[in-house]
Image 1 (cartoon, helix red, strand yellow):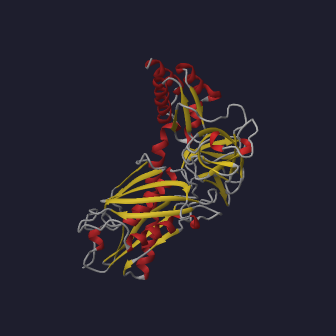
Image 2: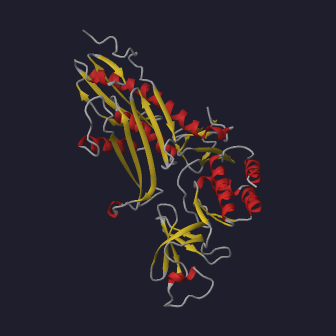
Image 3: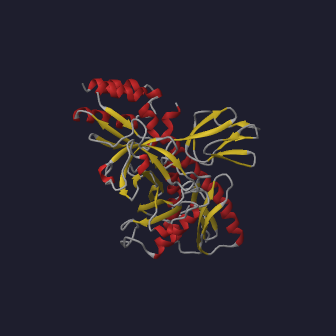
Length: 235
Length: 227
């Protein structure tokens, strides 16, 4: 039996309902809220500020430091132990590498820009939501960036290529693959590509093509909310 | 197609295409890739001749030579004071730039500026590695005594000062307080304590409504309403 109808009734290329807002944390230099389906991410950016420990300082450019964290009761199952886990550490690292190609900190030597992302509620696609939120927060903080980064997961469920898998699809009882992708807007350059599961070559190429239109939808929302925050001054 | 793709005074986000073709030149906070000019920060588009530039709407204060700032003394060395500028970089105020009078060799520097003191200073030098030199020798530069210090967003400083200082003069005239605005976003207010509070609230109001039209009138009303 093939997977013809998605568990939540979406079309194959349809994303879960999205919502975002820039500037939600007053004490941070830049912040953002990003929700896709039941996955909610809050990103806060601090800096550029003095970097300690001092041996990490780079006299040529500033450092980007990301931190990802799922909150204890964010998932649908067990309580997650708070603090850094192996998984959180890895996702913090991939987030950093997904954002680094566009962030230009050459004007801020010896400093650090900290990005903290916390997820109070999760339902698959957390690293993508985290990256999309972080990108809005960095722009809100006035950090020089070449472009925005938009991220969404694509994948394959029982032979059907779909965009933005939810948790029920990820755990569907068949051959499933989940591919988080982050892309720049102008060049459509991939800055994050990971995969879990199995997929055929044809399906993978189809999925990556789908990722282009899917990240474009995320980009449109990012653009809208950033302009909304400062929008009044254009009139 | 070539030319400007974005209206002047519109808001753009990083990566948006501002102009196409070679008719325009990339200015501050923009960059050129092939034949297109892109935005590098979230900001307001402005056009000066053929140069497209962006005024950032948020972001850190970048120290510039000639800026008057308010700094906090964090350390005293043999011949200088280390001053926190409210940015990622601290600045040095050398002994010879600190006072009009001669400071003797073995004088106690903390008598002039102690740790924790605030001072109104001007930036005299900024290197590529963001080492900053300060001076306190020019008129109007001194140690901050009494009053209160508040911190505002450094991008809002021009609105607090107003065109040719219109806003700041209004506040000073209406309340009788002395107000010094540092480019780094630190504001020193000194006067009668209830007036100080009024100025503080007025400045916070400016910060909140900085993008609105007729702000000077609104602040005038606010200050008059409180009296």
